[in-house]
Image 1 (cartoon, rainbow, N blue to C red):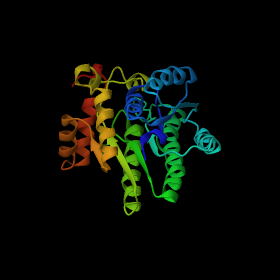
Image 2 (image 1 turned 180 degrees about the vertical axis):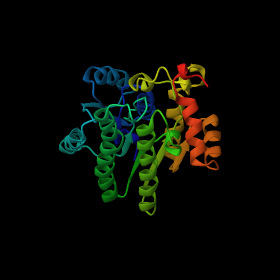
Image 3 (image 1 turned 60 degrees about the vertical axis):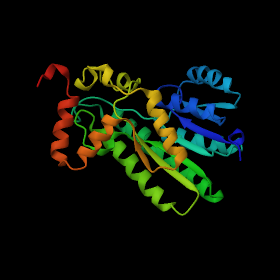
Image 4 (image 1 turned 90 degrees about the horizontal axis):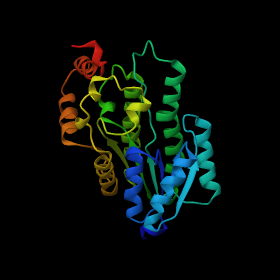
Length: 266
């Protein structure tokens, strides 16, 4: 079956890695359901993507609210659209010490990064299992592989995403469904502004940040190849490999040194 009759649903599709992934699907003639909070940004992105001669459906949902994740599932079902590929890209962090950060904001991040992702994955995976076909790409992070002082909740949510993805992949290994985790490192997107992270040491050398289009291409290629997970970028591959043989306490200290505010010095 050609891609022209297939639909990919992408959350967080109006910026960063999500938008770059949407471009790749559009170039390969997948129809798209793009999701974000901002209808104006969705409409602007849809105009750009439609230049590839595909159908683009926009759905504005605030996935910080789990009820809107359920509503998204219902809206797609009511429209009678089969989702052939699910991309859970939407995610956010919040910078600062765990003890000082606003609890309600961090609970919202858990709802976005974990709860809504789980709702969407379960809903569309069930449909894929029923027809024995489909693909899922979950945005994890190299943050999923290490404790993250100054972003403790974000790192913990991404560890959940990676673990969930790998577990489900094993459960459906005897089917025609593939589930892939994409693990980027620090990437040049709006993530850091939203996380209020501009003072972090890790951001002072912007040239060290990965390009979002390159990250998206790594994830897209891995998804299409049916790979279980992909760490995007050579530097990040090395970091993860070293992390695999380094004690957790040492990793936490290393990450603390990378992520603490510049004004805290050495």
